[in-house]
Length: 303
Image 1 (cartoon, rainbow, N blue to C red):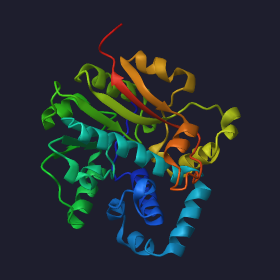
Image 2: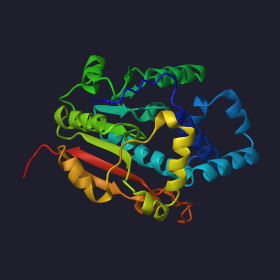
Image 3: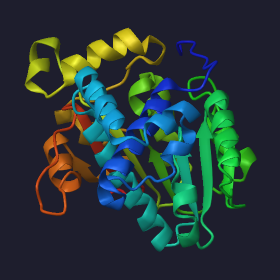
Image 4: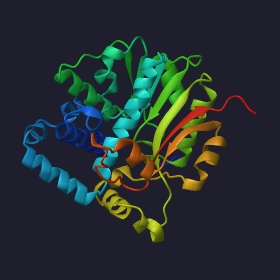
């Protein structure tokens, strides 16, 4: 039975993700290390004011790093990874992109001029989604007719039913982006989501998502920032606790048992080497060590 979790206010973790993306954008002046130039519009006005000042940004960044080591760097890498998937889908004229737990994702707006007809479905809890739409309107950002907002409680409502009512087409290939969500869900909700991707999708459908690997308490100190991350989340974000993880050695089998096949899979070191190199080829830092990226396809054709 699903644990009853009803989001009654906008997500705090989504807001802090927007804060980190804003700091990265101002620090690295766009480019691959800070591309989200719309993230600041989802922050409260006083945040946006103080972030104009380099010294204050530095203090905020250091405080965030002290509390959650490696998470600023992880947000930079995560944004780059999912930007790449999103842009590839637009380039290939993928008919549909589904954002599962969109938060303050700005890709539909940052890349609007590159969209040649791809339908984008943004799924999220109503409080977060309502606040997002208010922020977009206030910033006078155009919302394309290709974008459809779908309010949902992932632990209690059917993705299938919600998407069908919103106009999702089962017979069209689709990119599912599941960014910053899986670890907040119960196993049953994760399995329901993956089952929907497997059963209801065109054979060229893909799902890209991040997750946390399972780490025992005895082994936690071998992974950069993980103990601090776990303690901070338990203390400061008890209403958004981490519930789901996959053992590193079982990721492929976990997905195969659910009808999905790994296309690419990056551990923490591979993420750093791929997404955290500056223009001189130097690595800018480490990510919190338990995060992973995966891209998987619907494994329809059996061999």
